[in-house]
Length: 240
Length: 244
Image 1 (cartoon, rainbow over the protein chains, first blue to last red):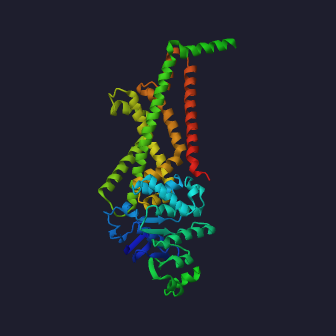
Image 2 (cartoon, helix red, strand yellow):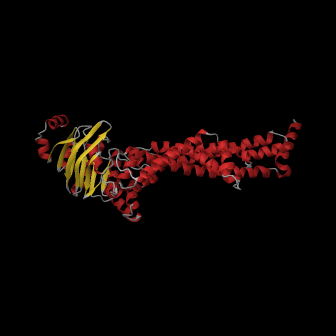
Image 3 (cartoon, rainbow over the protein chains, first blue to last red):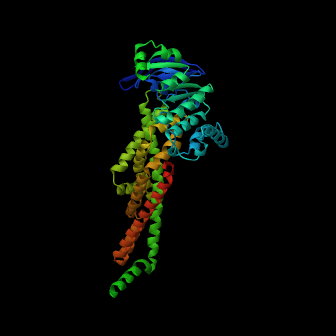
């Protein structure tokens, strides 16, 4: 579904991604872990080209996103993204946050979009907040709305950029629970997270990033119980 | 004391009643309002265009690949607009107004229109700087969130960034409106009769300075106070999404 070829990215002198090659198949739930500054968020943001790679290519369902002829806006409709800081639109109501993009792209009429948004809000127990503004929600509620906003576009893949890092501890659970439910539906996901227990439970494959490279990857069980690379051993000994 | 009141009434009558002189003030007032409103609208329109072009040019400069012909046009346009802003800020408005009246729009029959254009073009430069600040005040995550749901850069600008930017800069925009209102008092330079010019005309007829000048000052003050009050009401209404 997503093929990453020899991806490089630098910020100034900092070489953040040093040649990433990876293939993500449909239905996979790939979890990226690694220390801060290891390049995992940058890699995720390169997948929908929020970050423009310096070299290499990202191919989504046969379309090379790094080619200048690609209509990125159209591609991004199929790739939902959830941010660390939620990034809800503060001047729009919760309902408008969710319906804005589907209506703008004429994927749904306003009535359909509203109906669908309300059903999604119902599912996460926030239907009564539909006409309030993001400032009135807690962090956990905001992030769940942000997930629903991405889902409203009916994406083929969901990208999560540290979805729980900015949350108070007691709100982490509700967000992880929603992502877990989403995982059960078979949605393809790429998740950057520091929640190791969650990674192990939800991921079908774990990638360990360090110094801009994928140093090790495995299915969750083996990844956590039998790490090979010394850097991964060191990392796991610190976080587990 | 009684003599004082008598003089006051006499002066008032001479300034406003005799020969229907209030009509002069009224027509001047109408021109002041007309020029201010039209100039402010032109200014905001120009300001939005200039600041958005600048934003686009900025983001093109930051990306390494994907330079198309359109990209170069935007960058060139931005350079031209930057020059326009610096000229507008670097020359006196009175000179800009007279250049507009006697060179650029020389022979244009309606001098009020000339004033609207001159003040609008001048104000646009200042408004663009204000809006640029407003755009920068919106979190970068907003643009990313807009793009991530497939909105184009322009669409995100229009639907997500600008509404928040305008809200953040309302007080500054209000100041610009107040500045335009007061600056219109120089249109007498090209013989347009506004409030100020009207008071000059009446004063030169009655040779009495007090009523024409004080009255006009009061009218300006009331207009500015009204504008400020209206904007703070608008601000409160727009702030409803901030309330917890």
